[in-house]
Length: 266
Image 1 (cartoon, rainbow, N blue to C red):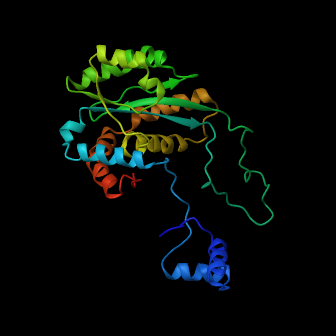
Image 2: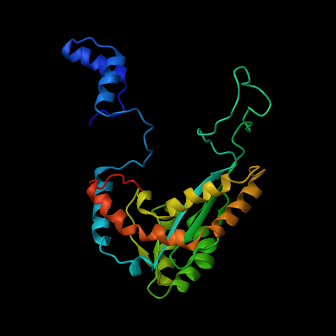
């Protein structure tokens, strides 16, 4: 179906302009409902050009026959930002008519969200690293000295001689200095298609981490406590949960080409 984001009024105006047929917006909605179509919130995804889709199809075709033992050699990595006061439109409050501003019915927030923290993490079926708190701009030099040397290389060594590093195409990860270090340290790096967070199982780790932190009551009082709880809950995610995420790699590689390199349900 084309023009999925057109409103009923858009469709009504286009119908009138092309066929000179006048119908109401409600009639348009009724007909759409008859075909099983309902207005839903769209899933948010990264922009995928034709080149992105082709690269994703090629990558998935190359890896679709990998066995679990091969995926067990991969150290997956990604970064995520967590806000002290996340914007969650699903929050509801029980109140009577006229109690909109009653005590306990107002969700109090700081004017600019209270700040946020950026963290990096790495997972495999065999281990997970501690979260790394990114403070300020992460340059290639910092990425090499503060992350690759003390965290990533030891983790790869613990996985074994066939370990593979998966990272995205962020500029600090692909700087000349980092590339030289990767070669000198004999790190086996996986080529990764751009704009493909749905192919990375660690993305669901961030979702789980967010749910776990939001279950704390009261919520974190400051960024320091938020960071502490993130590390605590990161360590508390069961290993079986991480393994299940990584075991889904074959299905991700199946779904992506089936969607012509487009977005998958992951």
